[in-house]
Every structure is written in C-alpha cells, then in structure tokens.
Image (cartoon, rainbow, N blue to C red; front, side, top):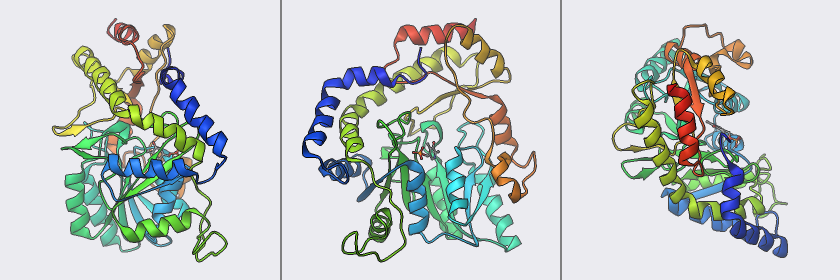
Length: 368
Ligand SMILES: *Cc1c(COP(=O)(O)O)cnc(C)c1O
C-alpha cells in the first residue's frame, strides 16, 4: 500500500498527461511557454483571486512574498511552531526573525489566543518590528482566518497565508489562497495539487505585490529580462510542470470529493477510539493529511508497518526545537500544545485513488 499513490493517479490520467507533455515537446517553449499563463489564469479562477504568479516551488513562493512585502532585518513575522520548516525558514532567510506561536489543539492550526499574547509580548519588549502573521493551512484545513484577520487589523499586521497544504480548502465557500493579503501554495508531488517535480504559486488581489513578484521572479526584470531594475531570483515554473498541472487541476474537484469521502469514512470508524481531526462548521479540508492523535502512536505505527501499511509523523519536531533556530533561545514547554502534538500525531494513507478495501485494512489494524 502507498501512503500517497501518485502512480495510480498517473495511470488514471495517462493519456491526457502524455498528450499535454507531447504538446510541450512539440512547441519547445520550455520556459514560460503558453501553458504557464493558461495555468495561472485557471488557478486565479479556481481560487477566486485577481493575480496568480507561478514559481519554482512553495518555498520560493514564500521568499518572493517576503521580498514583495519588504520584510527583512529587524522585522518579526509570527509563524506557528507546528509546521513544515520552510514556513519559518523563509522568514529567517529574508533576514527577519520568526516569532513562534502555539497551536490550537483541535485543528492543529495557529492558535489566535496565543497569537495575540505573543504579539503583545514582542511589542512590550520593543526589539522587533512585527510586520506579518504567516498562517499555515496545516494538513489541508484553512487556518482560523476570521479570528486572525481581526487580530491582524487590530495590530496593523499583514497576513501571509502559507497554503502549501491547503489548496482546495474552503471557509464558507471562500477558497484557500484567497485569505489574507497574499497567499502561496506548493505543487510538490505529494501536496493536494502536485506536479511531477517542484512547483509553486502566489495568489493575491493586490496589483502592486503582483507586479513586484513578477519582477523578482525573473532576475528583477524591467522592460525585459536584460533590463534589470531590482535584485531578484530565478524562480519560474517549468512549462512541462504547468502542462501536467492543467490536467490535474481538471480532475481536482473530483479528487477532493474522493478525499472527503475517505476522511468521512475514517472519521466514522475511528472517532470512538482516537482523537480524529476536527473540521469546524463551514470549513472544508483538502485532506492533505489525515492525522490522528494518540499517546501510543509508536505502537500503532509499528502495527501498521507489520502489515505493510505506511504511516508518517508530521511533524515530530516543532520549529522552536529545530537546531537551526537554537539562537532564538526558546525553551522546552514554551509551546505546550504544539510540543504535545509533535509527540502524539501520526498520519494515515490518504489519496483519491485509495480503495475501500485498502482503507478497511488500515482501520482493521488500528482497531485490532
Ligand atoms: C511543502 C510545504 C512548503 C514548501 O513547499 P516546497 O514546494 O516543497 O518548497 C511550505 N510550507 C508548508 C506548510 C509545506 O507543507
């Protein structure tokens, strides 16, 4: 059994994807070919934003956003400590300081109550100038944007939405990627919408940010790429990846339905025995991961492994406990909820091509 079966998805889409790839090979415009713009337009329609700028990966997407917002030395960005490294890494890479925030125990997302406490603590300390809150739509569930937007407005902070795992999620019909001032996603193969390599995108309604990011994306280009008006990077999405994504986006709504059906079925069968993921009313998760909480996770992981069933731990180390962030001086117990999650979460196989029989096998082992 696969944790995420990308080969099964390819078999399902083979003729369409092969045709798309052949079209690119025939026209030969490997960099910024017509599929890139076509994809950006379709993504803008799907998410419901004015601008989509594709780029080389989800990490670069965050870096480009931080550049566009002018965030650097002396600035602070609030980031959940329970996330993938790139969220906090890009803040530090930009020269700014990540300010970690604890998690909500039921959604695993950034906790609005702790967020406000950390903001007040940093402000009274007076060393950093807080600029933005980086929310993360962890495991596919949008962060609590209604609450976070209020806090952002109260303290004059921007919201950067790291929706690398959130693409396809919704709150009351509004889609992930459209929350906050600017949002990013990743097309890493295992993300809800993945390509066959690295890829990423940025979403915003702000014309100025969009223009700046289009410039930074290609060596700070002005009129053309040999007219350089800023120091930028080289972070384009390959035409081949855009072509593949066009076919995957076409079946994405259908895949989301399948993920939701699997999640509902896990929920029905496992909720009496485990802490199963909570989806607040009005929210839709894209189920990037299906994550359980258990004090005996190692036993369950071992039992699953015995039967050839893969499982994963996202994440066993919080950001404030990463060696790379030692210098920030955080202590153990600074983030009790996130630290507990790091010790108790584990994720089950979850992908749109998983069969009922496969899911039954997983559930059987967990309930044995
Ligand atoms: C995957 C991921 C990223 C980085 O995306 P890449 O495309 O791998 O660079 C950033 N943030 C989160 C939360 C992620 O899960």
